[in-house]
Length: 364
Image (tube, rainbow, N blue to C red; front, side):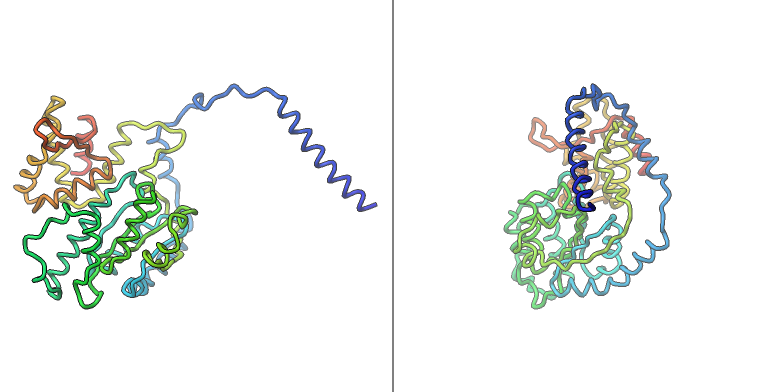
C-alpha cells in the first residue's frame, strides 16, 4: 500500500505540472513593457548605495591583515619567476596596490586597470621598456655600452621589438625586473583573445613579473594550457576581501538608471584624483585652454601647444611623458583626439563648459 501511495503522489505531481503549463499557455500575455518602468537617477542610486553601512568590519580587517602578513612570501614567489593571480569575492584593487607600494619598492611598478573599456597595450609595453631601461641605468650592472646612446624611442618600436627588449639578457641574473599590476585581467578592456596573447607574452619576458586579479567565474577560460603554465606561470592565491567594487563599478552603467552630466563629472573626478599631481595639472592646462575659447574649433588644443606649456611649467620632461599622461586620459575616456587641417593632433575634453568648470574646482 505504501508503494502504491508513493506512485500515486508522483503521478499527481506530474499531472499538476502539465495542467499548470496548459493553463499558463492559454492565458493572455501582459501588455507591460520595460520602457514603461520609471527609471531612477543614477546619481541618486549610487548615493543610496554609498550610504549602506558595512558589516563585519572587524573580521574583514583581520582577514586583510592576514594577507598583508604574506607580502614577503608573495615577493619570494615573484623572484622565483612566477606570476601572482589573486581570486576570490570582493575588490582586490586596494590590496594589490598596497602590496605594490609597500613590498615592491625595490622594483619599478606599472598599474593597469582592466576594468576600463579600452587599453592601449602598445603604450603599456613601451612604458615597461622605458622603466626597465631606467632601472638598468641606475643599477649600472648591465652592459649599457652595447646599446647606442641615441637609440630608437620605445614608443616608435613595434610590439615584437618591445617584447624582445623586455626579454633580453641585459643582466647576468634575473633580479632586475619590472612588475605589472593588472587589476581585473579579465576586464572588458583586456578580455579579447589577441590582448590576452600579448599579455601572456609580456608575462613570459625574463624582466617582467605580473600580479593580476580575476573576478569573473569563467576567467580561466581566457587561457590555454601553455599560457597558464608556461607564459603567465600563475601561482594562484585565494584572497577574498569582501570589499565593494566601488571604483570598478563606476565604469559600468547601472541597470534601470539614466545618467546625467553630474555623474560624468563625478566619474571624471574620481579618475583624476587617482592619478599623479602632474597628470592632474596637465589636465588642468587642457581644461583652461578649452574654457578660454568659446568657439567650437578653438576648443581643440594642438598637441605642440600643450607640450610647450607643460614643459614651461615643469609638468613633463619629454613628449614621451606627456604621451603617457594623455594615454591615461584616453583610456579613461577623459580626452578625445583628432587631426586638424595641418595634420597636427588636437585634444578635447568631452564635457560642457559648466561641467568642466565644476570638475576643475573639484580637483583643485
